[in-house]
Image (cartoon, rainbow, N blue to C red):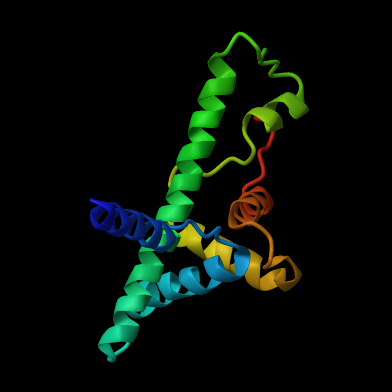
Length: 149
């Protein structure tokens, strides 16, 4: 019984280390999104199977991260718009900008969003140690500011 308990605990400890979450920073996201842009532009991957697998994985993580961020922004906007704790005043630019942290065009593509993130990260190498989420937000705010309609 003690032997089984020990093996169980050992398995739990080792598996928790394998699945430990590592926060993505700007440097990580830049590497992944560069792979995504490269695949999109060249329609090819490295001839080395290992590198090709890494490029495709990086591309998927980049696209998933950006789409997840955009989904969060959409839900955030809906939540603020529909709660009793928030009053929308369309004559107040600050309120509009608070509701929409940035305003994406309806026809924007994943590729364009990825290019915006890569450009922002390349233009701000001093920020690459910061959280990827913060940097995506800043990139989108800079590229897609909300304007008064």
